[in-house]
Length: 216
Image 1 (tube, rainbow, N blue to C red):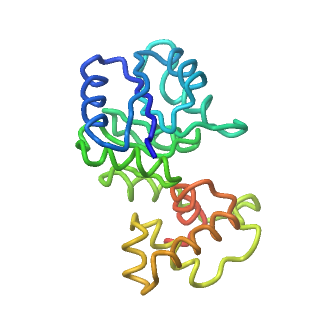
Image 2: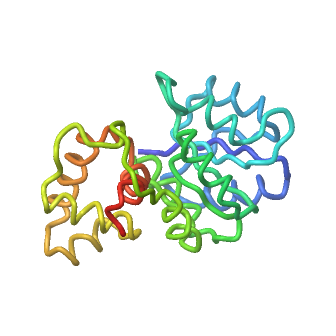
Image 3: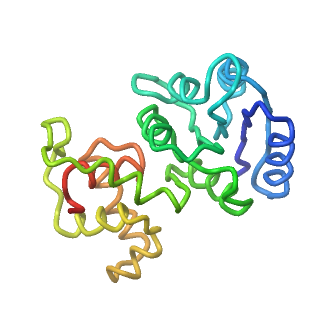
């Protein structure tokens, strides 16, 4: 299956570079590239791409607001967004994820991570630049847990093990190797955790782990 991608960035060279990287992959097609936030919203709603790569600082609407409009809380038919930016600021990371982003990537992360971020978003996972993952997640650590942060149903000990591994940034394959589980079993545990927490992806699982004090 071909992954359809929209690129939104106000710099021509960035859009050209991203397009060249992505269209070199057999399973990815760039369906549009736009240079401002208003066009990003309209084109995304018109074309319904599988994934949008979204810059933050753009004319019209910034990428964080575009992300909120495309996949934020209350959006009935969300479109997956990966924020790709030059600016390594905690405020941007937190806002992007709160607005529903399926990943946060720095522009200097390299072609391989860019491609993997697109594929991860399409399959319902999320990728965050490794250099900011742990730092970002630690900011979610709070001593108290509100009722809204409690799972609908108690997690099993094995599910908690999987959650801790996700919060440390491990992939499904790495989790399986560490916990001596098959890949399918890891995926089953993750699906159960998502259901119990009401989480949409592994980033929200990880942020819950830090917020709830599970990682302290």
